[in-house]
Image 1: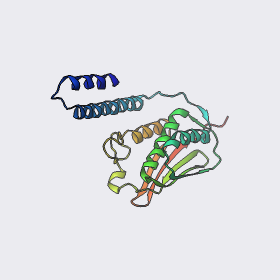
Image 2: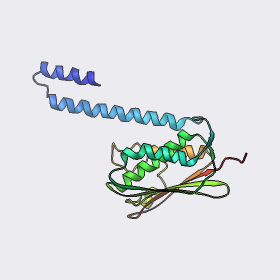
Image 3: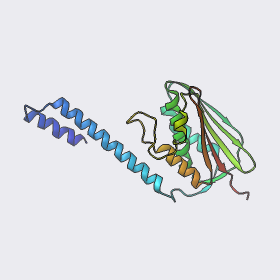
Image 4: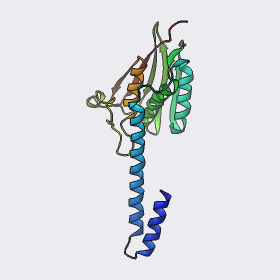
Length: 203
């Protein structure tokens, strides 16, 4: 990429009619497009793998800790993350995959609240399943869009801000774990994503 920019700079000097500024801008836009395509291809690869990640007994709280750490740099100063953990027995899972799910949900919540707001990350448990909720008090999702949020390539974000694959990948991962993921939302009030996961069999 740097080499391409260097070639253009040399060409602009050699060709008096070439507009160096416009050419550099076009090259930058092209490279951004290439990076975006590469990101989409990477995500499609993860989306299509049905056997990614070895399953093991894991603590859900530690998985959420990791997702929270990774999301940290994207949580702006005005965003408050409130954590509420109910005691949950171990689950049988591929920890890295579930970290990706909860990271996606936290980053989506951060985008929804903008520069200020509250994100609530909560865990609950019943006799057979654990439930994780990621709730935000952001702008909410329009009713017409709710049924499509898990569709591949569907996004309500501006062009260049999202691939529309994060929630589709998350849905696939949760399904592979024998779980469920649901969303409820109200315009102007916020959104709640709920993830149910089966507990590990008793030993």
